[in-house]
Length: 154
Image (cartoon, rainbow, N blue to C red; front, side):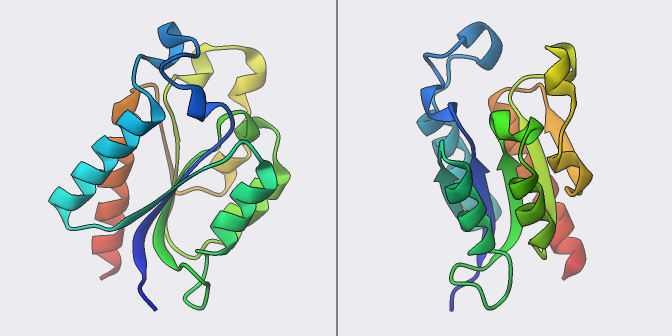
């Protein structure tokens, strides 16, 4: 069974990037961000699995399917942009907690500079790190961060 280095999970409404509130989220589409992530992973010698859903349960399943050595699609590291579910989903919290490798929560915008309800993150309670506020670069910084953690594990 081939083990992927990174699972990158994207939550609701991220499929609307480039159209939805470009003043907050930027002009990049999710496809633009995926292409940049794939390019960086290739340069770094990493493999990645990209996943996006507007449905909470599908996100949970994607993480569960990569959480363990014996999972159908095992991954060594997890990067998650839970989007709105970051602030509401105990189910995603539980799934991320199950994941056996390092994990990083990311956001395109700085959630602490926005509405009060966006300041709470269930993901941050179980992730190894948080990167936010750098637009597309939040993803690229997370890839570099996870790569370092994976290298340290050997």
